[in-house]
Length: 187
Image (cartoon, rainbow, N blue to C red; front, side):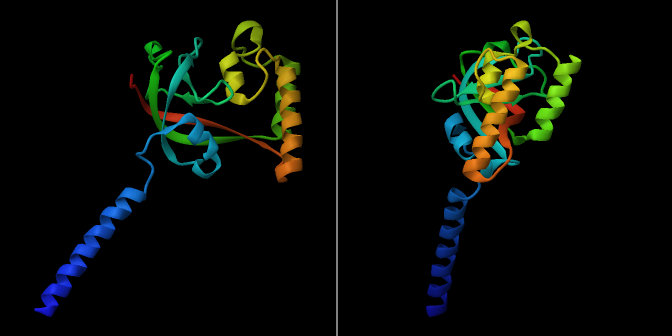
């Protein structure tokens, strides 16, 4: 009888541990808001995430970029579509949207800025937004002043890189976006 009782207790304990591990383990299926994602972006880079937020803008030129806003305009995250997913639904604008995809970290360093400056000099940049300045929503996601020219953006990035190097010892900026796999309007 003692063996039966021991076996039963071990079975109950095992099932309890499995259930608990499932509840606290993988966050891949747990939606986050934009602010939570950006706060934990460094640790989540390269992972599949689900993020929810208010869609403030869809790129008018391509329809392949959707912007989600957190608590304010400074907390903006870009989601990029691909040929498989296609263009984002224009009805997503000003609605709550859930996006699932891989969180991508882009490094902006001095070599990147020098190449960008070369493109500016050669006038080979693809223009977006009004007067080639770029979309204000995308500039918010990049952390630069709205309405900045390409040259002004380069200077702002250099200042930000210098500040980060002084504080953290890192000579680059990390910008994040989601390579979208799926999305849906949730409100």
